[in-house]
Image (cartoon, rainbow, N blue to C red; front, side, top):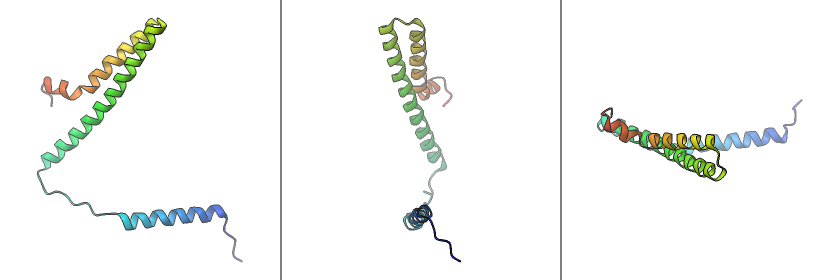
Length: 105
């Protein structure tokens, strides 16, 4: 005796089928450039440092907000936390330049 399939199972199978079809039909083959491997490593390094810089700028902005809120509320502990966040964001945002200045990169 055949069991009737539930509506949830039908939806799941439909979504699964569509996703599988999309993966099979819309996938492309990635070919290596055949160029210098050092340029690939440099491009990856630039990408990672730009991601780190973006995170540093976000932390820097949050530090500015914390310092502004602490000045408004006259809270010394929040002010010190804000300045720590602000200077930490600066160090993270300019990590590549700092490393280049000390000769590590």
